[in-house]
Length: 339
Ligand SMILES: NC(=O)c1ccc[n+]([C@@H]2O[C@H](COP(=O)([O-])OP(=O)(O)OC[C@H]3O[C@@H](n4cnc5c(N)ncnc54)[C@H](O)[C@@H]3O)[C@@H](O)[C@H]2O)c1
Image 1 (cartoon, rainbow, N blue to C red):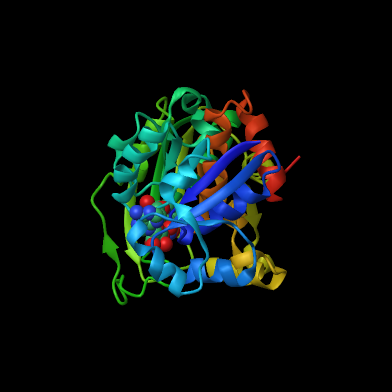
Image 2 (cartoon, rainbow, N blue to C red; image 1 turned 90 degrees about the vertical axis):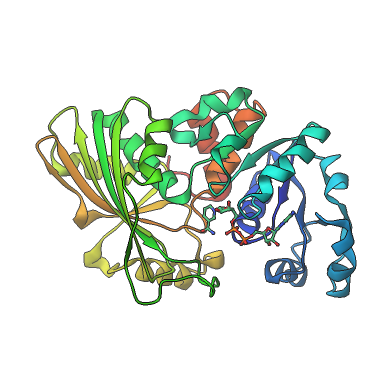
């Protein structure tokens, strides 16, 4: 059993913790936060029973006063783990890295951290092997994670020369009431960082990206245009997407008219938090014309990076040598394996 801790029990951290807890070859040793915020309170109230540690010792009384039983400090947890997944707000991970180094604990960091935190940018479907020898691994952002999965699937099937992405970016997570816009669409500078990150993890291809931030919370929507190395028919691409790992296809015709409809459907299914780990591709948006392939996909931003965090632990801890073995193992335990 590889022993894993999660530092930062917010939107991403609570999901990583649940994902790790489901991996039968990993032990979730505990989670760390600095305040009795709602995810921490919900953890205690739900009875899920993950041990809670406090990242700042002087905050322990606050947590205990809110009814959160605190097992110890961050240092105490680090004495018991092989690796942590750090999901603290941007910038905190860089400070935590020094603490992890002191304890000889390896770590993953999320897309909000500066690139300088790690010698690599990781997205397992593209570059699993790179994380085998690196103690501090930065993952790509949620948008890039989904883009990488879809582009890798198409690249392995047909070969990709160039990818152009236009990201319609959700302004905020549902509870981020301080963020906007509420009545605007904001263009970003080109190329978007997601396109340059895509080229870092898939250095053999050319990429370009546009980004526009809009007032929604249920996921980023990306239009993709890739130039292939060969001509294909639309049906070939649909087959690849239907079978692709961590890709889920939806049909507009079935009622999936928007990303909110996908979210509602997951709620109706009773999926915890209505989380979707896969990138969602609308089938009617897939179109091949000669060597040009187009599609539109949805990025469920709160959940999509969870499988890749778990894969990074697998890679660094030597749990699986082969990329697809690792991905399949993670996915089996998460309940999203496509055999
Ligand atoms: N929310 C998303 O949609 C999303 C998607 C992909 C990647 N990310 C990235 O994931 C990271 C975390 O984002 P988030 O949305 O989960 O943030 P969040 O604010 O929801 O959660 C962060 C948690 O870390 C805790 N924290 C703060 N300082 C700490 C410390 N010193 N020690 C331990 N815990 C501490 C906070 O109390 C909070 O509970 C960021 O880098 C972000 O860019 C976020």
